[in-house]
Length: 515
Image (cartoon, rainbow, N blue to C red):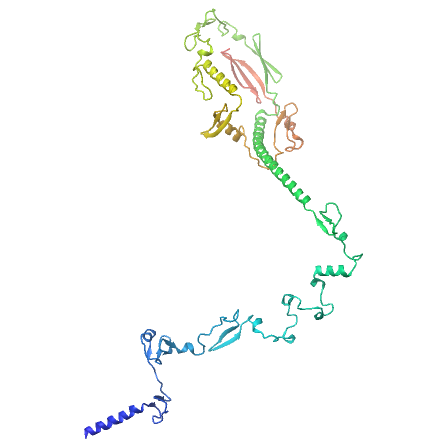
C-alpha cells in the first residue's frame, strides 16, 4: 500500500515538472500558456537578488540574469559581457552625441527637462549645405537683414536697383571719376588740380606733368638730416654747459659759505668795536722822541716818558766783535764764541764740481756714465744724441698700464718710457683745489666769479650781475655806531709801561726789557 502511494505522488510531481508552468500568488489556477513563472498579487512583490557593486561584479551569470544593486539603487541585467544599469538607459538613447560627422559644425543640441531629453537645432548651425536650393525666397528674409558683405560681386545689377537708392558713400570713386571723364567736360563747376594743390610758399606738393599732385620728399629728408645734426651739436653743448654748471655750483657753495663767514665776522666786529669804523682804533705810529715813547692812535698822540730807563743800570747795551771768526761781545757782559764750522768740520770742501757731487738715483730712460752729476749729464747727452742720430722713425708709445697710483708708459724709438704719478692730478681734479664741482641750481650763468670790497665807499662788488641786482651791495648804512676805542692812560713800569684803554682801545703792558 505504501509503495503504491509513493509512486502516485512521484507521478504527480513528474507530471507537473514536465508541464513547466508555475503560478504564484492570486488566481493560481489561471496562468498564461506562454509563462514559465507567473506572479500575481495585489499586496506582494517580487524581490530579486540584492547585492553590492563589488558582489555583483564578482558574479558571471548567464545572459539575462537580474540583480538589484544596493550601492547604485537600481536594477542591473547581465548581457553576457557586462552588467547593464537599467536606470541609465531609461529616458536616454545610448551612444547619442552632438558631435558633427558629415557637417562642418554641430547642428543639433540635446537638452534635458527632468526625465525627458529634447533634440533641438543648435544656434548658428544652419549653413548653405543644410538649405535646399530655392528653399528661401523674399518672404522668408527679414527686412534690412542682408548687408553689403552678404551680396556677391555682380549679383545685383542696375535693373535690381531702385532709382536714387544708392548714396554717394556707396559709389566707387575710381569708377565715378572714369564715368565723369567719359561723359562730362571738366569745366568750371568741377574740381581741378588747381583747386587741389595750393601754390602757397613752403608747400611740398606740386602739379606734375600729368596734371596730378606730386610730392617731392627730398627737401623734407634734407631738412630732417640737418635738424638731426643740429640736435647732435646741441646735445654736446648741453653736456658742456652741464659740466660748467656743476663747477659753478661748487663755486656758489664756497662763496655762499665765505659770505656767511664774513657776515658773522662783521657782526662780531660791530659787537666788539662799538662802531663800524675799522680805522679809528689803529695804532698808526710808535716812535722814540728823546726820552719819550710817542704813540699815535686814530690821530691822537700819546707820549710816555722813558727817562727813568736812561741810567747806568738800564739795558742800553751795544754788541761788538773783535774781528776774529765766531767771537761776539756785549757791553758790560761776556764774550760769546760761535761755532762757524759746517757739518763735517771742513771749511774748504764746499767748493765742488759736478764730478764731486754723488747722485743715488737710478735712471730708467738713459744710462749714466758715473754715479755723480757729471756722469748723469753725460748719460742724458748720449741719450739725446742717440735720438737725433736715429732720425727717421718717431718715438712710439707701445703700451700704457697702471700700477698703484701711477701710469706706466712703455715707449720705443725714443718714445717716452717711464712712470707718470696720477694721485696728485686726480686729487686736484676731484677737489678742484678745495672746491666742490657739483651744479645745484642747473644754471651756468649765476655763479660768483669775483668779489671785492671798497673800504673808502663801503661798497661790496660782485662780478656776476645775474646774482645780485646792480652787481654791488652798499654797506655804508652799517657805518657809525658807538664811541671809538681810546688809550686813556700810559704809565711807566719797571720793565716797560702799562697801557689803559677804553671802548675797545689797547689795554695791556709793553715789555721793553728785551729792547
